[in-house]
Length: 111
Image (spheres, rainbow, N blue to C red):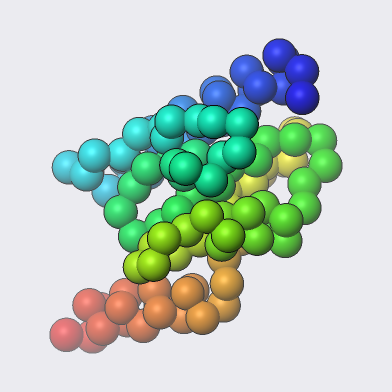
């Protein structure tokens, strides 16, 4: 991976961290410490999720989510935040994790 691609990745991780801070006010959310292996820290450190970020011309949601799954400690949901060049960002997560979130959200809406 070239320097320009690494810089694009850093900028994207910072942007994702900022978006999570907006969505979760008061939480300590920041870009994770990056290593070559990428399994010591999430790309974005935040509660609940182990966030893997990708911003590329070609993206494999399955590979990004698998990378997050392999590194996520127990109790953290793997989440891939993806942005294909010149496209709207999206997230990928496992259906059972998504349904857990929907269930918690629904409980707060109906109580």
